Image 1 (cartoon, rainbow, N blue to C red):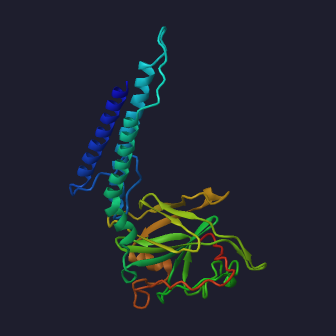
Image 2: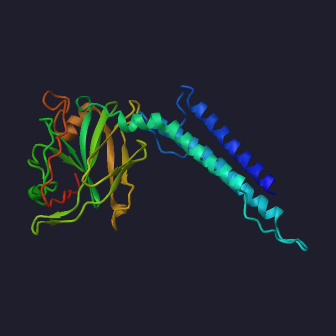
Image 3: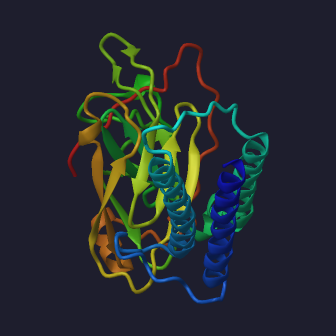
Length: 314
């Protein structure tokens, strides 16, 4: 019996590695893999790398699922109750445990190696600020605010003490200099660099605020998901494919952040340069506005909560 189970486990492991190598070879032949039929429209330049990894891991997990279910069905049939058969007690198989543990470790190492190039490209190869369209993204319970640097190409600082509900919901030093929207407007075929910031709600009357929580910026069409961590601005990037039609795409929070989590969504619109100029109210490619730049983070004041609230609606 032990030999039978060990043989089956060996077959499953060999099939898993074989299918994985085949899928990896197919994805590395220089031709972008077709989008899986159950995936949303792909609109980002690195999205095909995510889809390749998704399909690779799907094949691997499918082989594991079929193998495990096959062993279960085999055991149910072979060891079903029958008159006169006595149960046999066993402590298990050390060889089987070692083989399966090594196979699992090998699979994880294989995935880590295969995905490294995609990880480095998406997470580390950020475009230079002086070549990208810059946006600051503020996440709070339960909404998103998107801030553009305005004609001077510089983002304003934001502090709790500068919050004035209705007029300066984000606490910007000069809210007239930045452009604030509740829709993410981005250009086509240009790198977009975003700085993600988590903010807690702040009451200027009592000068008290709630502690910001973790959110997660998720755009299925961009194949982009990044946690928004309190007190730690994080930069992410993407570039919309040139053939992408003008359309509106959904942005959601993919991290449970409270009772209104289901309400935390926004829209992203892909615009041409002329449309961006009209929508934002300034020419982002004009001298002075481009290249834009993020401000270096200022030291937090003692007791500051980093809180703030965003105004909903454009």
